[in-house]
Image 1 (cartoon, rainbow, N blue to C red):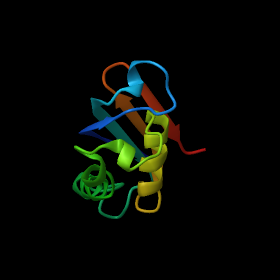
Image 2: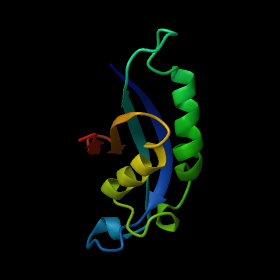
Image 3: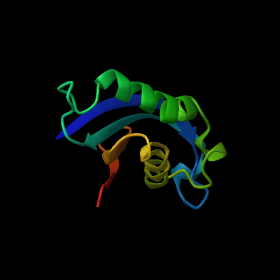
Image 4: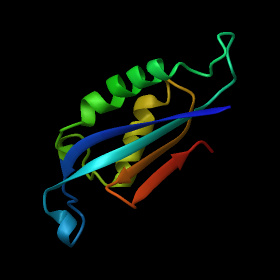
Length: 113
């Protein structure tokens, strides 16, 4: 069974290998969707939503929210941010997918393969 939760964070970055407006320092409100897949446990849940929130907040949001992403990643494209988030969570929860919206209408997703 799959279970998901949506989170939001604000960060700024520039893309050093990009020619155009995104090479300038700018910010985004990111929307993050984390989906896990596992069996229902004895308590009737795949994972308590509150526990999932705590894990994502501690492992991801506390490190990325209101930060300069260039201090965390060499090239903070949406794709590289998703890879960073995946690595931060993969040993803590049974990840199925991580989807990140960079503003409205633009997203990248990594799924379990």
